[in-house]
Length: 131
Image 1 (cartoon, rainbow, N blue to C red):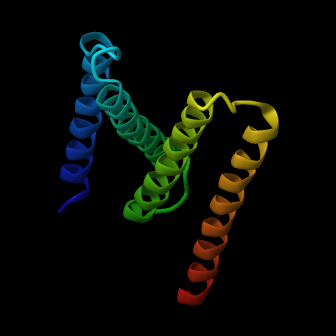
Image 2 (cartoon, helix red, strand yellow; image 1 turned 180 degrees about the vertical axis):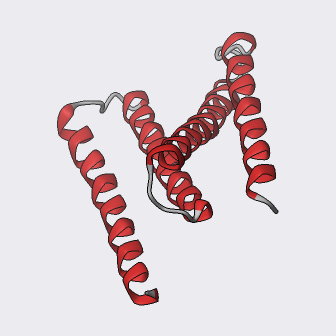
């Protein structure tokens, strides 16, 4: 699959996720089926945020970056988009459980920062080994 067709598919999927999120937000009643509504809200928002952050990150890296291999840039952008979306979902879970406080948010954010640092270090090690 070419990069162009992959990006087109990615943009369409992200737009569909945002449309699904808006539909859940405006059309579903949380009082009638709370579990289904909250699950649909979380899943659609997670996919929409992951796609949007990934596309934004890819665009910025492709425009300002120095890496000529755009699929490598795309891999990093998608991973970071998913990390941001999972962090957001974690924050929503903390809020739903009424545990959203700085002493719970800081360790969660530090975990994801350290996880991303680990992935970046692994990428750097692999790049040095392939040269």
